[in-house]
Length: 419
Ligand SMILES: [Zn+2]
Image 1: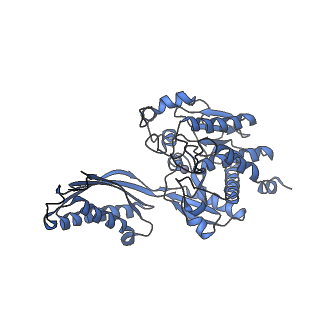
Image 2: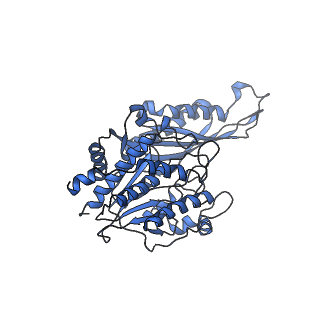
Image 3: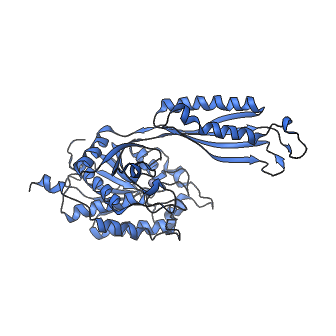
């Protein structure tokens, strides 16, 4: 057998992958079968220690950067070439699932183990990363570790972020023993690859093995303020009211209908509502709404913004209230490097895995990586499309298929000589 055909037959150890996922699920396990593994808490420390121990067992170098990102390096034969990075995150939502992020880290660990066991030497080094605070549920914003790594977020500002109890991210890193330095951390990359559960229903519904992720939706957030007139619920005749909550209700409905008007790919959500005075027998005088709007194209997001301005003005006119809309966040769509994406597609084909292109509606560390290196993502299905919930689940075979796709995509990239 030539070296090439030998490498094509290479596969992850499906039982070891499944066991390693089961083992890491113990750190922060909830009674409902999920995870409560907030960033830099004791359970996150245990999951990190478990990963580091697995690396040390194989003799792979471990580096931790100043924001606590962990890098495990399996050295290539030409270690001066920029490495191929594979990674995801071990932190979870407060009542999250076992596979969001963790699957990507442990699939990556299995990739390194499989290469070791098969005695495959790669030209470029392979680096497995665990990114700090991806979820953003303990420290805001989300994807903070990869943002600092890629230069999109200031390090000192990140270390000063506080959780609801006032603990700082920097203090928590020191407490759990993950306050590192840039020494030994790869700063120039050849390629970044992340395997992740889809967190949506498409792959499972269509019976497709692998999602080839071509990019990530752009996100815009808006605060809407509705000002009406408060008053007594018993003494104010209906015709004389300017009820801010009734107006807000019309805004909520119109937002939910935006996709029908503009694009089926649009996601428009009113996720928060604050009513004042929020008392049963008082007419609501003011309401604040928090909106989240997503689409893969900036032009459609621009159209959605104009539509929001119009619909809030219409509601104000119809209800006699004052409605203002204020943009609070604008994250442009991410388009992944076409060559990196094509590499993933080619691997899926070669392995006989059915696949389709997808654009991710959720943010990922890969959004930040894409700023500094050609980046691609691989999605596997998750049961019922459920994620950020204790019942999040995957099938053993899906886990194996995704890890094998990652293995071969990483191997292809690691053998490339050109940048
Ligand atoms: Zn995730």
